[in-house]
Length: 269
Picture 1: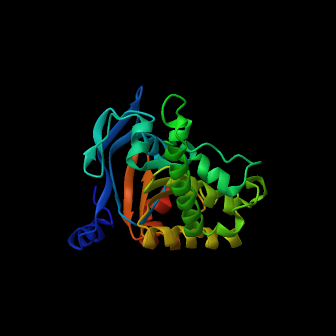
Picture 2 (picture 1 turned 60 degrees about the vertical axis):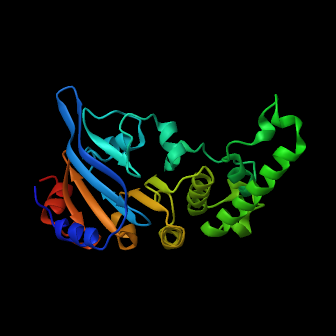
Picture 3 (picture 1 turned 60 degrees about the horizontal axis):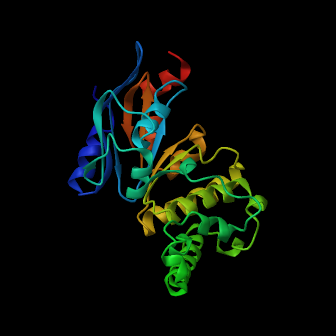
């Protein structure tokens, strides 16, 4: 199938944009139902990619394959030049590929800073047999972790809220806290499922301005699955539309949203 985004795809390739993640001819069947049929998408470093489609189009199945929660019947997932098709989710997280719900929900009674610190791993002070005995080993780690956590909160625009209870944050601020915790976990490629859900439309702009800043300045790569398309499309660098388990359009978001196949899919044609 030829779609509107192919020329844009070739242009991006000629400009040398680094492909961080790629799915190659992904097929997934559930009994006699083909949920994914030869699906190919690419995420480029520091770019924000939108994935849309009506209910049942295959978006969630594709994201489950990418994040490792289900195995494809055919095809490959390649991340940072390495095939990860059969790696479990936690191994993908270690490589920097994180779906935000993989980070436990914020602890409402802890502060924003404490929540970010809780996402860090490898504190030698937690080892009761060796490193926990030596204060020097874990004090140095905790100092670095604190500095990194504060830096990340600054990146996402929550530094002024560092001492607030997470339970007191707004919906948009909680989404930013999710991102901060993912980055603290080591993520450089983040999958977000409906980040605009439950966020006041006036605050969606603020949320996505922070996402854009992270993408441009920190080179964090985002895959955004969203139903509130009209609110978020203008913040995206690239878009894919799915229907009936296939990619039916890709390219610049406005081109994808106005593609006749995409319009027809949402109208149920």
